[in-house]
Image (cartoon, rainbow, N blue to C red; front, side):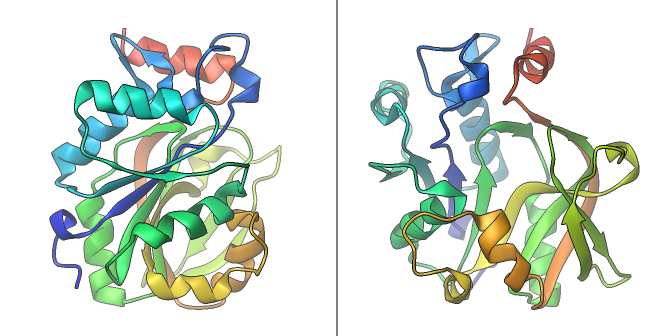
Amino acid sequence: MFNSLQHTPIIVLCGGQGIRLRSMISDRPKVLAPLGEQTLLDNIIAMLHAAGFEKIILSVGYLKKQIKSHCWARGYQVVFSEEDEPLGTGGALKSAMKHIDTDVFFVMNGDMIFKPDFSRLLSLQRERNGVMSLFVTRGYQGDGGTVIKTDSANRIVHWRERKPEDKPEKLYLSAGTYFMKKGIARFFPNSKSFSLEKEVFPALFSEPCYGYRTDELLIDIGVPERYALAQKLFS
């Protein structure tokens, strides 16, 4: 059943170390990077609450005690999926899925500013019933990324890694925000630590997967220049 966001859990992957941001936020995890008077995490949770999500699962690893204390101090009703060692995006998702008690769920990266209309992805998944649906955007501000091509029915027909000469504003790139069926687990390798993007998606995209196209701005705050850009938005 996935009739509403209220009844659909979301996993936020926020276990990254933020190594390239150490010059600016060496004392905290990336998800607690200040943005105006709040943090990136505060903005993510506020966005998810406004969208209607009730069950939010935070996948935490690096400096996880800080994240937990931050949430407790603000009274956030969230579930923690804790890593004791780096698991990669795939391993973190695999571990967090232990907290999922529905057949479907959302996943989003927790190191970015991106405010999509989640109900659009819910509707696309309801219409197409793919293994996975994801947002693809021409508003991507970040390193690398995955270029996604869809057909007239929004089915993903081609994907590739972004090339240095590519212009993001002319291409649709994965926005790191997904609607998945629990059956996606059959594509996971047996290893504890693995990459969702490199070790799961190549096989997964051979199945019916769909992309919802948007021009919504996405800022990956992982380097000082883009973190500074994000700070300007909240100043």
